[in-house]
Each structure stands twice: as C-alpha cells, then as structure tokens.
Image (tube, rainbow, N blue to C red; front, side, top):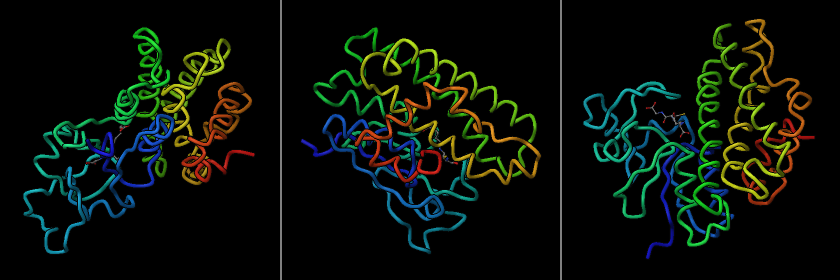
Length: 261
Ligand SMILES: N[C@@H](CCC(=O)N[C@@H](CS)C(=O)NCC(=O)O)C(=O)O
C-alpha cells in the first residue's frame, strides 16, 4: 500500500494546497507535495510525474507547450496525460497514488483527503446530511475564492467594477459565516470540519489585499477588508482561533502575521 493518500503538484507555497495538508495533519495521513515557486512553474513539466525541464525542452514547438490562462503568463508545459486527468489544467492538481485519477479544485482535493481516512473523526461531518451542509459552505467559499482570485490578480490596474464585485462577494460570504457562528462554535457545527479549513485558507489569502494597498490607492479605492474585524467580529475571532490550532498554525502562522495582533 502507498505511504501517501494523494499526490499534489502546485506552485508553492499555496494556501489552496494547505487546505489538504491541514486536513491530512488532523487525520494522520500523508499527502505528497511536488512543486516550486510560482515564477519557476513555467520551467516544469506539468504531469503526474512532474519534473523540472531542461533548457532545451522549453521550446515553442514542444508538444507540451500551452498558453497559460489564470495567474501565469506565457507558455506552460503540460502533458496530454496531465490534461486528461486535470481537464481544466490548473494547480493545485491532485492525483490518486497510482496517478490514474485526477482531482482538481482545492476544495475537492480537501474533500478527497477527508474521505481517505478510515475514520475522519467528523472532519467531513458524521453523516450524509452533515457532509452536505459542509459542502454548502465549501461551495460558498469557492464562489468567494473565485472572485478573490480575479481581484488579487488584477489589483494593480483595478477597475471600479471589479472592486465593487469583490466588495459585494466579501460581504455576502462573511455575513453567512458570521450568522453561522452565532449558532455554533465552528462553521458547520460543534467541531472543526473541512468548512473551517477552507474558510481559514481562503480568507487568509484574500487578506493579502492589505499588503497590496498601493494598487488600490492608485485607483483611489479603499481596502475592502479594512474594518472587517469590527464588521464581522465572530468570523474574525474564529479565524484567529483556528490559526492558533497547531494543524493550522504550521502553515498559516507567518502568512497571517500581518493581520493578527
Ligand atoms: N479554484 C481553483 C483555482 C485554481 C487555479 O485557477 N489555478 C491557476 C493558478 S492560480 C492555474 O493553475 N492556472 C494555470 C494556467 O494558467 O494555465 C482551486 O481552488 O484550486
């Protein structure tokens, strides 16, 4: 039997990868991670057996060369097998240990880890209905996360329209989290679940906007999350408490120091 439940290829560090690693730490399972700094991923062959390319392999007429679409510029080298298992061609890209099955979208990779342990200890709910409620939060998190991705990638040269969309998406998502936390200690009930993990990673990533304020200032636009601790006190207290947990802290501590006191 394999010593790991999943292999992930991605740029690193990446909060979307941390979702899977935090869950793995809770469950005592191993996830194998391959990758490199974002700026180096154009020098890699994107594949189950991902590897750094030699200079002479990075040619325009390489059979693996593809135009990048989100968060990268120029060519990326992705094998046909990669595109078969990862039809959207994105990272993080996860694979079953034998490479036959591809899992994409970081929230689904997170679910895959939670499902891999014989006893997930409630991390993905204790029954099908609980799991479905957790899925509801994961879907809401993805909608927020997608808006945040477009916003953060476009923050230099941001338009009023894009800023307005992000402000609305942030408010909508955080209002729901705030309301859920009025009734329970954790987002989906009385214990930590993968809904908390996705929330912590995606909101921490979004809060990088505070470090990118020059793009906003240039467009005379405010930092959307500036007063969020006051507007969403439960959500932010929850975020801080989660980051104190060792399974989260290992990945998120340095990354979130800029907004934690
Ligand atoms: N919602 C996805 C986002 C994945 C995504 O969009 N990844 C981008 C990098 S941020 C990518 O792999 N782009 C590949 C390309 O441009 O071809 C997730 O959570 O996994």
